[in-house]
Amino acid sequence: MSKRAEKVLGANVKALRKARGWTQQHLSDLLIEEGVNIRQTSLAKLEGGTKPTTASELLALATVLQVGYDELLPIPAIQLQLL
Image 1 (cartoon, rainbow, N blue to C red):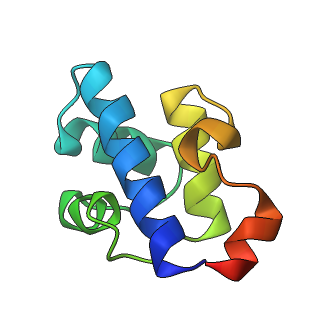
Image 2 (cartoon, one colour; image 1 turned 180 degrees about the vertical axis):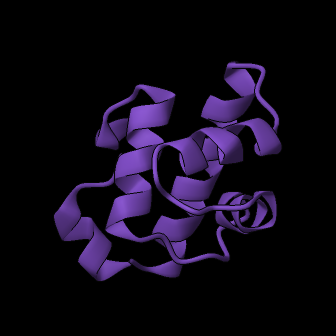
């Protein structure tokens, strides 16, 4: 994933988390329960767009936040290759 896509993903995760009134620690705890080991410090980097995200992390984020992938990363796949 490109750096720009990582920034978009991070901003969207942060906005969705805040809209739910969750702290980074709470979201981290939920992700760990989902089987993805993302500590609060790594989540902060993800939200800041500086941590590359794996497919399993993306799946867990969508599951825990109860959103589709398009809400996490609303960029058509073809554009991701160009970023």
